[in-house]
Image: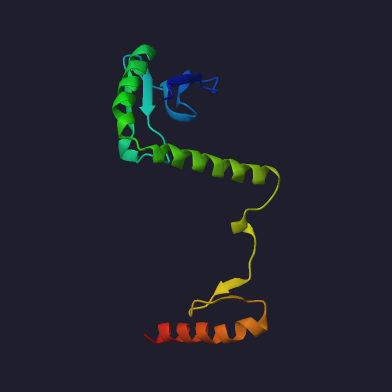
Length: 153
């Protein structure tokens, strides 16, 4: 079973750590910005998305890093038994999909949803190429008839 590990935050302007459970970031502990000196200076948050519902996430504040770490670890101990293994798989799948999209964008490629397409679906359920008159003519009649019926109602 993986253990919790911390990695220093990359932000040079804000002291903090990202917390990982194996290969998944499950939270963070960091110094709060813009709070009065008499308020808790550290904040922590525990949870990850996708995989967990927003209501399952835990968070809080602490006077010191050590108190924040202790509170985080306690929240994680309570949360972990309630997390199904599929939640970790869902997170990994999402991470891989986002990495694939980023790699395509880095290479200058368009995503399938960004490519123009002349394929349409008729109201009768058949897919056809709207740029091919022999395919599209009967379906145009269906579409116009459906639009006319909608206007007459």
